[in-house]
Image (cartoon, rainbow, N blue to C red; front, side, top):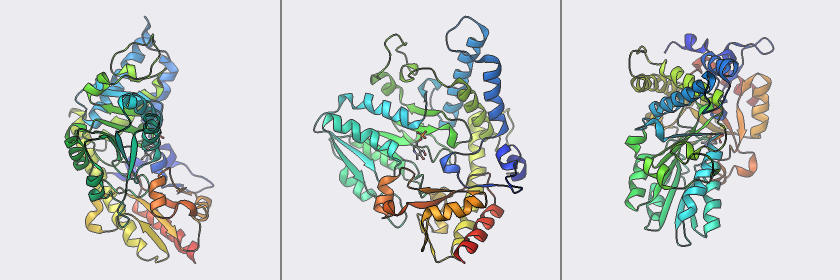
Length: 411
Ligand SMILES: Cc1ncc(COP(=O)(O)O)c(C=O)c1O
């Protein structure tokens, strides 16, 4: 990838703050946005701001934008059809609404599995739905040495009463990727549905919902260089079979029956541009199918992200005062995203992020709503961790600057 050319497409990466270029390691909390996405959103609002179903040009354009956005996400996720893509305000709101609909059929003997690796949008939603029905919720443990899920524990939790498994594809805190495909196969043997949270995974890896055979998969466009739009893919039989809570006059057809209220159409225009931006990271030109370009793009960005991870982990060895939670083995870089959860001897996570923030290096500290993970790792009551989140637009030089600042901070 031509890093300087792609970075020049991001106004945020080109700006100066107090005369210096800021460094963004905050991607897992929300990625930076290329100019093409800003332009698509501004053009929609400037010329076509409307709603669905009117007898005039801007409404026609709004319908077209929505269709294009569904097709763009279908390409990104390899959905068999665009009609299986549902939009909403964000992943959390969509997951709460899917959990209400799916749990209508649950009963007292039913069991649900959530995980200690997940952001609580994929935990609280199911836990609260289960509480309403008297169903039992099991929390799947992580392996503390690499923060992946404990598959033996998973096997022991599955049984004929398991109705649903809610699992994250990759941890938003440690970057560990879970073997979700195998978990889906195992869950399906017991007739359980699987709802995959791919919010953290989506900007880093190519998703293939058909290969996974997941029942539902959720992601969020602001994590993959787009605006704030939530997304759920569902198998058609489920989108048709479950009954959402919806306003009665709204059409009861898939996928719109799952979309409550007016969508952010400018956001959907931005979603199309964001998927096109990712596809542009491939060396293939626009004459190739978008899915093909996306495949090549993710191969390129993964290669760069693995190089960032390798460099980060090797520099970290110079600092015995810093502890990393997650995969450290260089032979397993493909099994993690370049997201690093750190604690510092003698310093609160907030002290570290504030020091870096003063130097315009943007990192998050806290638990990132990954409460089960932070509890199991014993950092929940200690301010969580410092999260360094690299994206494909980050550079080796930026990582070196971060470690220079670590050296200053640790004296
Ligand atoms: C892994 C993961 N899942 C879910 C969410 C929630 O997504 P949203 O902000 O779209 O509700 C986040 C947000 O940070 C996340 O990182």
